[in-house]
Every structure is written in structure tokens, then in C-alpha cells.
Amino acid sequence: MNNSNASFTPAELRQLRSLKNPHGIQRFLDEMPYHVADTAWSPRRILREETAHCFEGAILAAAALRANGYPPLIFDLEAEHDTDHVVAIYRSHGHWGAIAKSNYTGCRYREPVYRSLRELALSYFDVYERSLRTFSRPVNLARFDSRHWMTTEKPIWFIAEYLFEIKHYPLISRAQAARLHRLDERSFRAGCLGRAEKKSIVDF
Image (cartoon, rainbow, N blue to C red; front, side):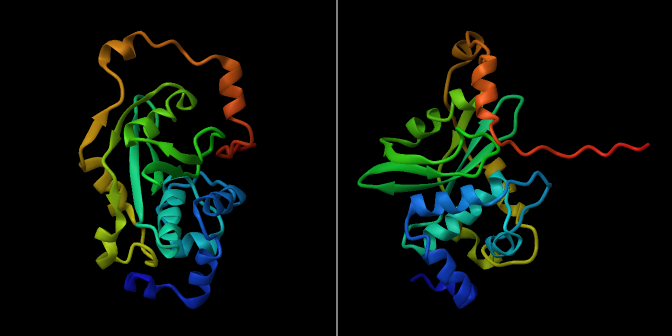
């Protein structure tokens, strides 16, 4: 096991290792409530709070992948007029799969059947209301070990900032984007099944 896991407590490591594989990690994320607060918690903080959003879910999944013998990889999907989607990625038998936390039902797990990261990114295109435009190269979070990204009590916005800076590759051309149709209402409603919403505060 990588020495960088030594900063987790034995109990935390047992919890992460008990997930065993990417599908087990995804099930763990699916059982965890989605929250909409503007936070950037480390995996340790997420395990304690027992809730996560998209970015945090990807970071927790990357730490869990590492605890189970995979490199802690993520990549970023950039959208037009929408929020980005960050997912943890892994390879099995030469093909890519993904683990993700999302407020939309279709933007989560992907089996390792994709030959390239572009293929994997395109699998999210329709369910992301056809707004995805670029995908990043993979990022190995081991590059942030000196900043204790897995266990720090401080926000880990530095990872999100790094994703903004790195090279992204186009998913579709401008001409293709100009010819796109809107996602139909039924498909949109299906994707919102169980969606968490921000609570509005009303003064009386």
C-alpha cells in the first residue's frame, strides 16, 4: 500500500478498503446524501460528514480507489452554461470506467467498457442536457500528497483550481454544437429523480 495512505486512521482505511472495487465505491457514494453547499471537503471530512456533492464525491472515490490498489485518478468535464462534472476514473482490462456523485441520475457510474477518455466523456453527453463541450486529461491526485488532500481539515479548492488550469480537449465541434436540439422534458424529469434542491428562506 502506498505510504501516502498512512495519514488515514486504521478505521478510515478499513472503511475505504471494505468497498473493495469501483462498483462497491459507487454504491457507497449512491447511499450517501447529496448536498448543495459550496464546500471542498477532503475525503476524511466527507467520511465524517457522510454527505458529498459532485466534486467531493470524485475526490472521495479517488481516495477509495487508491486504498484498493488503483491510482487516484480524476478528470473534468466542462459544460456550456452549466456546472462542470468531476469524476473519478479507473482502467480495467485496458478500458476506462468512472465513479461519480451527481444530482442527476444518469451522471454517475460507468462500467469499464470505454476505449478512450473521449468515449467515456461522450457517455455523459446526452444525460448532461447536451451541454458538455470539453474534457480534461486525467489527473493523478498523488501530485497533491504534499498538501494532504486526503485528510486535511482545510478546503481543497486547490484541486478544483488546478482542473481549471489544465488542458481540455473538445468533445464536439462548434458546427455540431450549433445544430444541437434541446433535451426533451421527459428525459430531463427522469434525470432529476431524487434530486437535492437548495432550500429557499422565506421571511414572513
